[in-house]
Length: 260
Length: 205
Image (tube, rainbow over all chains, first blue to last red):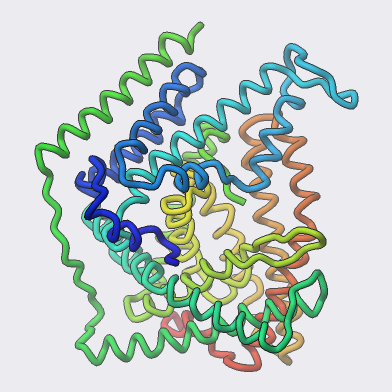
C-alpha cells in the first residue's frame, strides 16, 4: 500500500484516463489556486452549491476513484467538527430549536453549512487537479512555477522518503509487538512510543548521512538538476478557459444572490 | 489542528500567508543544499510520526510532534512542516489551500519557537535533564499551536469563541502526551546519538 496516491494511479492510468489527467501540471496548480481563492470569497448558498457541483463534475472527469476521494474530502478533524456543531448555538439569530436551554439559530446553521461547502469544494478540486499528479511531477511543476529551488528539493526528498520511513516505522512496531508490547493509556506506552519516534529520527539521520555520501560519490556538487519540460497545448488553454469561465459564473451567481 | 478553507476571514488568511512566506524564507536560508537530504529525511519522519495513533483513554489521538521537529531542525522546521502540510492537503485532503499559510504559522511557528527556546537546554546536563526540557518544549509547542488555532478563529468572529474554548480544554490531555513523548524521544536521542540536535546547526556557527 502506498501512502501518497501517485504510484497506484500510474498503474490504472493505462485503462482509466480522465480528461483532467492530460492537462499541463502547471496549469492544474494555478487553476486550483484561482478556483480556491474564488470559492473562498463566495458567501451565498447558491454560489457555494454551484461550486460544489463544479468540484463534483471535475471529480467525474478525472481518473480519481470517486468513493475514496469523497471519503477523504469529508474527513476533517475534531476541531472543525466541534466548531461546526457549536456555530448554530453561538451565532445570534432566529431560533430554530432549543436544546438544554441553548438556542440554535438558523443563521448559525447557515454559517456552518457555508463553511462546510467551501471547505469541501476547495479540497475536492485540489485533490482532483493537483492530488492526481505524480508526487515527483508536482515537485517539478512547482519548480517550473518559480518556487524556491531549495523548497522544491526539500519536498522531493520528503516525498521520496515518506514511504521508506513508513516501512522503518512498521519494522520497529513489529519488533515491539514481538516483544509483547500492547498500546494502552499508560506511562509505559507513551515512553515506548517516544523511544520509537526517537529511534526513527536517529535512523533517519544516519540514513541521510549515507544518502549524502552516495550523492557525493556520484558527483554531487551542491546542485540538483530537475529534468522535466512542460509545454502548454491548445487543450490546456481550452481547459483553463473553461475553469476561468466557471469561476466567473460563480462570481456572477454571488453577485445576483449574495446581495439579496 | 488543520483549519479548513472558508472558516477564516480574508485579513487572517492573508496575514497567515505573509508570515508563512517569511518563515519559509528564514528556514531556507539556513538550509544549504548539503543539508537538504538530512532535512528532507527528517521531514519525512515527522510526516510519518504524525500518522501514529497513540491510545488515550478509550479512544486514540494522533500527534503533531511539532515541538520535537523544532528541537531537531531549528528554523528549518518551518519549511519542513510546511512541505508536510502541502502534501497532506493535496494528497489526503486535510486542511485546505488558501489556509496553508495560516496552518503553517500555527504549527511551524510554535515549533521554531520551541527550538529557539529549548534546544540549548536539551543538549546540556544529563540525558534526564535534557529529557525534562524536551518534554517542556514538546508540551509548549503543542499548547501554543492550540492557542494559535483558537486565536485565528476568534479573530474571524465572536461566534467561534465557545468552540475555541471547548477545544482548548479538550486538548489539554493531548498536550501532556505530546510532552511525554517528546521527553522520551529526546532522552533516547541523547543516549544513542546526541548529534541529532546539532546536525542541522553546524553550518551556521
